[in-house]
Image (cartoon, rainbow, N blue to C red; front, side, top):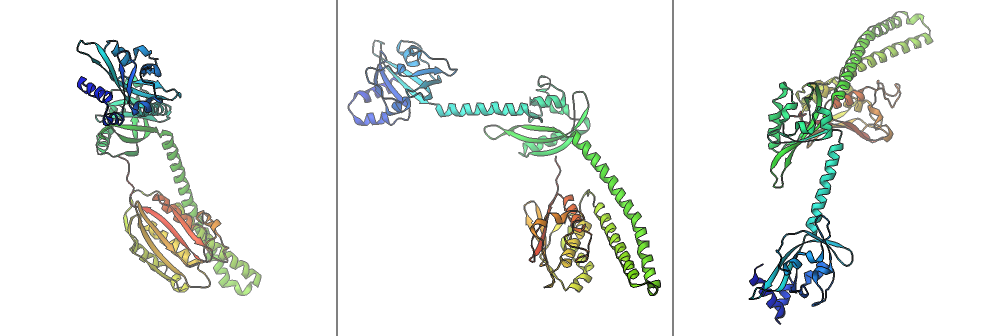
Length: 500
């Protein structure tokens, strides 16, 4: 503040006009005036609010009314406060950050801006000080500092390697888990290119990742291979996010690297075990089909050729034998179908309308026999194997016909609803329904809610549906009430994009 401005303030204070005093009291910053000895001659309303007390004019020395500490916590003697130093002819210091304590014990941060007025002989006649309350800013700074310390502690204690880099691919930070995972200490790796960790046959990944980051994209769970300091390779999953500065500009990236070597090894073991199991089930099913077929054929021959020579009980036993062989043949066929649903490689785009038409043609006999009425809304083109979608419709519509109510003809509706990430398809019927406690159990292998005498089947159909849907990262469920029908719904994502 200029000397002319200070003289104007003193003139307003010493003068009798109320408007001048009102102007000073309306200032949002604390302001006070002293004489050459530091005794108060004026203070405004903001000064009273900031200090928490109303001092006595002509008696109080403003510096003596507070306990003042420097930013580092060092107590500041009253004779060394900025205005006291200035009144003694010392150098005027502006921009200090001080902590003061009010009479009630509460504290606040402020920055003083002191100045002095001199007479024509150069003698100091008045002191003036503006105190800017910076408590909120200091609180925010402290909060930010604490958050930074907390974040640093979390990063250092994480089991995952957490690394940051700039847009040139130069490593800028490296936590303890990164040291354990890759074998480099922070001193060895910070400032070096991240390509040091990338095998030679995967060097093209880095520019692609940088390009995505510059576009503001996040890379989620990208599974790849990286190299340790000792040259060994490990399977890792990367999640990489762009880092922005205060202006919102992307200046680098934060990377979380998780070691998935053991998971990959376990997955490979499970895959081998599943293939062995599928091969065994396939072989066993084929090996069982032949003797079952023979049992069925010879029991039918016995019934045709010797029925006149067998008594009623023997014919009944023979009927049980044929029925058992038939059920076993269907069970083996369904079990074989279940095991043959393997992980698909690349799905095709299949028209669900055309697939439904094929299924309804294959079910024409059951539809005619039951008098079922089946309709559908417009169905989408979905990324699936046609055989899988056909099997889903076949099982769900076939069940809707089978488990119809004895009191009414089956009415079945097939529909699809578009979602943000894919499609929800539904097969709704007016059949016998399912009790709430069985809504999850019906999808289990060999789970049947009725005896074979009531409804034929093996209890594998819905398990096949669930396994098919799972292959496409979807889910299947049923909404149903006993006697009110059922709505089987399943989801199919639009696509499956891999990491980049």
